[in-house]
Length: 434
Image (cartoon, rainbow, N blue to C red; front, side):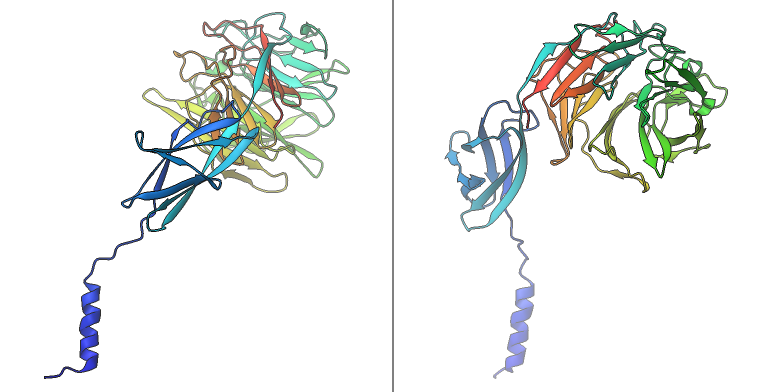
C-alpha cells in the first residue's frame, strides 16, 4: 500500500529530530609562555601557544604571522616583535575543517632605570609628597618609626638641589597617613591623618584639616567632626561653578561614637571648602562603596575625573583585594567602573599616574608580617590589566610617597623599611617614554 507523501515527509522530520544536536566547537587557545602578566623587557617575544580541539589543529598565527608546531612540547612557537608600551596580540587557531577561533592577549614592553634621588634629612614613613606648581617638591609630616609619634616637619626640594631642606615653621599639628590637596589658589589642604605612625585608637585620629600657604607662611586649622576623621584614606578635589568639594574615600575611622576601636570606612564622604572652613555635606553615612583603608587612588586622566582605586582589606581570617575605577565628574554623579583584581595583596602602597591611562603602584606589603614588595605593578586602562615588573628592583618600603617629577620620571620618597624604621633614601625611577 502506498503511503501519502505528506506522511512520509512527517516521518523523515520526526526521525531527524531524534538526532542529537552537535554544536560547532571552536579551538581553545592558551599562551603557555612567557607569562604575559609580567612586563617584557626584550624587543623580541618568543611565544608558545597551545591550541586544542576535538579535531586536529591545522594552523596557528599571531597578527597574521604563522607559528610552527613543536611536536615534542605540543605547542605552536614563533617570534613576535614588541613595541615599547602596550602590544595587542591577536592569536588565531584553525582546525582541519576550517573552524577558527581568535583570542586577544596583551604584552607590555618597558625599560626603566633606578637612580638615587635627593635624600630627606631624616627617615620618615607615612609622610606625603606633593609637586608644587613651580616644580618644587614638598614633603609633609610622617613618623620616624612605624610605632612612634608623627612629626610636624616640612621638607622642600628645589630642582637641582642635592637634598631636601627643612622648612620653618612646620605644621601646626603632627600628621601621618594624611592627604595633601593642591587648591586652585596654590594653597595646600592637609586633611586628617594620625598622631602616630600607626594608629591604635580612634583618639589617635586628627579630627581637623590644615590650610597651608607657603608663599605667606600662613597656617590655619579647620576643625572636622569626630565621626568624619580619617587616616590612610584618599582624597580628590572636585570644582564646579566656583564651588570646591573635597571627596574623601575610605580610611581608618572611629567605628562607633565614643568607641576607641578603629575600622575601615566603606563610604565616600564630601566636604565643601567654604570661606576657609570645611563643611561636611554627608552628615550621616556617605556614599557606600566598599571598606577600604591604606589603599591607593591615582588619577587616570589629566582632568582628575577618573581614578584607579586598589587596596587590600585585612581581616582576621582572610585577605580580600579591592579594585575599581572611580568616576568623579564635576557636574555628574559619582560612578564606578570595573577593574581586575590586584595580582597580589598590597596595602600601604604608593601610586602615580605615569601618563594618562597608566598607573604605577610602588611598595606596600601583603600583610604586616610580610616583606615589602621590591618591584612595582603597572595598571594600563587600555587593556584593563595589571602587569608585574619584577625585573625593576626597588628599595622595599611601605607607606612611602611618590610623585611624577618630569616626563616618565617618578621620585619615591620616605616610607618604612622591613623593620618599621623610617627611610630617608629616595629613588628616581625613569621609564623609557612610550
